[in-house]
Image (cartoon, rainbow, N blue to C red; front, side, top):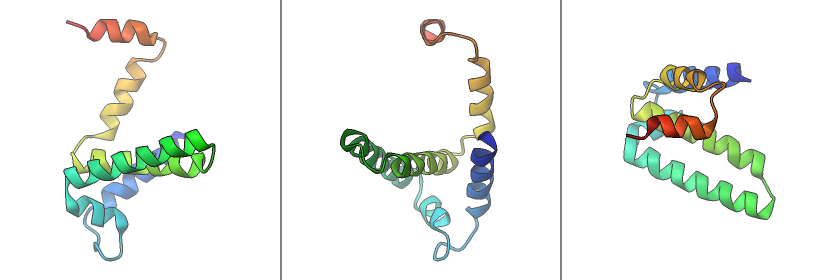
Length: 103
């Protein structure tokens, strides 16, 4: 499963320099982080609607994941760092992890 996400991340990175007329990813990235964030919010709203209506949830979830990864790329956030953080959290309860973050 993670191989698919890793391939998608690499594709998004590679499309950054592509023609914005032939690559939707390149188009999104060329618009900047605020644009990508707004698209992500739009996709999350569509997922929320899909879940409430029990319709198109798989399609809308895929859209959210794609737009999340594009938004991370637009903000120059290294996806490998996110994977490292998730690995650090393995075998730690969510309550414990949140408590460890509090000042």
